[in-house]
Length: 231
Image (cartoon, rainbow, N blue to C red; front, top):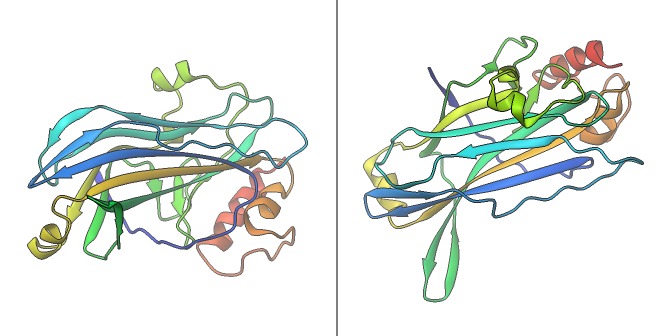
């Protein structure tokens, strides 16, 4: 089942553990050529111990893809460390054109929509699912148990931690599609994780340790759910 995801693009300062992967998608004429790659992946540690939740970004390379064709792309997380963790993930497209002078960024418009396949998302704050906040992040409403492995991911033992398993870029109309003809897209996936003790996530993600860290939904209820799960 496909779910449409409304993307919010806001720049927010981040503190904590960050991992990002860019999957490069080349758009050629009326068809797409998709190439899998890890063009950018960074981890920053802001705690007094090494802590690294692994970002899963599995992509099946395809030389050409028709417009609005579903392409398998598995995005999620697992936790190989010794402490339980909370995590949030942001996914957004970036577009550019390659000219004789180099790569020229293109603005993203409301006419572009990402549609995710088999998305484990919720709009009613169900535990062990991903809830979209109004800051553009998907929050996993559960704790990532320590000691998880990539083998468990491969064996579908951690399916609730997978955000989605496929993606389609759709255009609102022919005019929008024509605007991005011969453009290239990157689907950027960024994760931020923090250990699940007390209110550590509030400090890392929202720069406060107060119970009133969030006063409006959906972040208010996300905070309440995570607080009940915190060690």
